[in-house]
Length: 104
Image 1 (cartoon, rainbow, N blue to C red):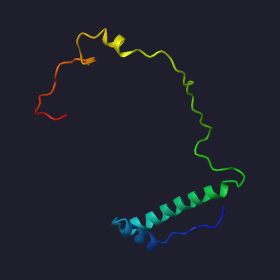
Image 2: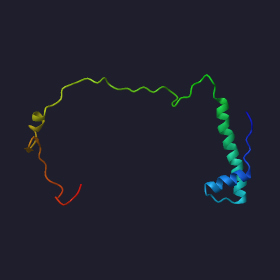
Image 3: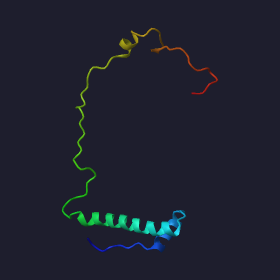
């Protein structure tokens, strides 16, 4: 691995203050160790990435599986309305469910 990053206790205290997290002295020591391990792990990912491999968002290529857009039969309004129990002004007539003073 490359250069080992050491996160100091004072840096952790500063980060905790910025995040408005109150940590005890023991918690600061533990957090410094844990954050240092995390930072080293993240840095190691950069070392493993090869220059000849382009960055990707998915492990396998994504392909949209869609049917071809083909114009097909579309029912006309008269045919659809012919099966309706009640038609008014070229539209389905349905019972009112809201009063005039109610808002949707």
